[in-house]
Image (cartoon, rainbow, N blue to C red; front, side):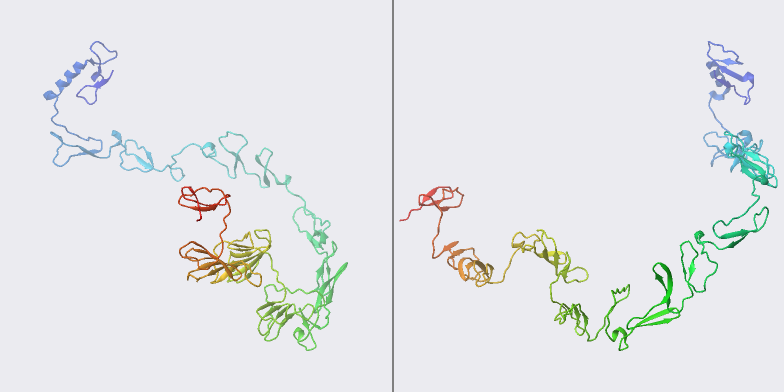
Amino acid sequence: MPIIYTYPRATPNVADLIQISSATSTPTNATRTCSIGDVVGLVTALVPGGGTVTSVGLSSGTTGLSVSMGVGEFNPITTAGTFTLDGTLVVDNGGTGAKTLTGVLKGNGTGAFTASNVVLTTGGTSEVTGILPIANGGIGHSTYIKGDIIYAPDTEGITALSRLGIGDEDDILIVGGAGIPSWTAISSRAVTSVDVSGGATGLTFSGGPITGTGTMTMAGTLAVASGGTGVGTFTSGGILYGNVTGAIQATAQPSNGQLLIGSTGTNPVLSALTAGANITINNSAGGIEIVGASSGGDGVYGGSGSLGGDTVITLGTNDLTFTATSGDVVFNNTGATPAFFIEGTSNKIGIGTGVPTSELDIAGSIFISNGETIGRDNGVTRNANIQFTDVSGLGNAAINFRDGGTDLVIIDGSGSVGIGTTTPTSELDVVGSIFVSNAQTIGRDNGTTRNANIQFADVGPLGNPVIVFRDGGSDLAVIDASGSVGIGTTSPSTNADLTLEGGSLAIKETTTPTADADYGKIYCKADNKLYFQDGAGVEHEIAFV
C-alpha cells in the first residue's frame, strides 16, 4: 500500500506516516491507518476556505539558487505570475556547486565539484594506483633494478613480463633452445685464435695465428684463376692479352703507327700498316693518316684507280654528296652505254641511256614492287597515280588508275577495263554514265571504216539531238529528240512514232496474244491472215480491198 506524509511537518516522524487502506481491512505493521474518506476530510479541515489557494510564495533557501519575478510581478503570487530560478545548485541540495567543468569530475566533500586531468606523473600526487597488466598494455611490474632486460616468457596467459638482471662485465647475451635469453661468459663463446691461408690464389699471409690482438700481412701475386693477372710487373705502355689460365701477357710499348694484330694459332703481334699502290701512310704519336695518291698528286680526284676487293661505305648519319657544275655522274658496268647517268648541266637522269631528254629517261622496261605506285605525291597523299598490283578482284595482275586512295579505272590481267568498278566482268565494264563528243561514235572499227556503230550528234536533220545506228558511213536507223524512230530514213515523220521508208515490215506468225487494256496489237497467224486485237481482247481480221 502507498505511504504518504501528513501535513504540516516537512520532516515527518514515524507517527506521521499514514498507510492508506480500504475500510474493511486492517494492514499489519502500520503506524497509522485511515480510509480514503478520512484523507478527504483531513484535507478539507486543513485548507482554509474550502481548499482554494490565494497566495503562493517561493524561497530558494540555502540551495544556492535565486528566485526572480517578471516585471510587475511579486513574490508571493496572489493572482498569476512566474517564478524564475537562477544561480548554481549546491552539493548539499544535489548539485555540483559549479557552472562549468572540464576534465574528470572530482568530489570535494560538501564543497563544489572540481574537474581536471588525471595525474599520472610523479610531479604531482598520483591519482592512479595499482599495476597495469599485460592485457591492458602494461608489463605487470612497478619496480626495476638497474640494467634489467624485459622479455616475454614462454608461458601463455601471463600477466607480467619476465625480468633478466644485468650480466657480468665479460658476459654476452645468448638465446637458448626455448627462446629464453640468458647471460653467459664470453670465454665460452668467443673466437680465441684466427689465421688465414692463401690456398691456390697465389697469395700468402704472415703474422698468424692471432690469439689476442695482432696484424696479418698479405703478400704474393693473385693468380688468374682467382681473378688476378698472375703478374707482378708490366712493361710501361704495353698492351695486355690473355693466356688462358696462365699469367696475363704484355707486349712491348708500341711505336708510332703500330697496331696489335691477330695471328692465327698464336699470340697477337705489334705491326705497322703497309701502304699499297697509290697509298701513303703517315704515322705519328697516337695517329695514322692514310692518303690516296695519283700521278697528278690530287688523290682520288686527280686520276683513276681500281678497288682491290669488295668495298662498303657506311655513312651512318653523314651525307654522301656528288657536286658537279658541268661534269656528268656516270655509273658504268660493261659496254659503252652507262647503266646510270646524271647530266651535269641539266640534272636529267638517264637509266640505260647516256643522253636523257627528260628529267627521267629510261631505256628499257620498268618493274615496281607489288602495290607500289607511279604518280604525283603532294606530301600528304599520292594523288593522280597508277598502282601496279599482283592480284586483283579476278585473281590476275592489275593496273589501277587512282586519285589518292580512290580507284578510278582498272585494267585487270585479262585485259578487261573497269570504269567505276575494280571487278570488270567484260572487256569494258562501266559503272556510271558514258558521254561522247558531238558526232562521235561507239562501235566497231575494222581499221578502215567504223562499221556497226552508234553515232551521237547534237544536231540532226530535225534540228535536235539524235542517235544514229550506222554501218560504216550509211545511216540505218535514227532516234530523234522527240523519240520518233526512223528506219531507212534520217527524217522520221513528225506525225508518227515509227517511220519505215523504202522497205518492208516482217511479222512472224504467232498465236492470239493475251490482251492488254488500252493497247491494240497487230499480228499474223498461221492462217496467213493479219489481225488486230483491241484492248478488250477482241480480235479483228484486217481485210484488204
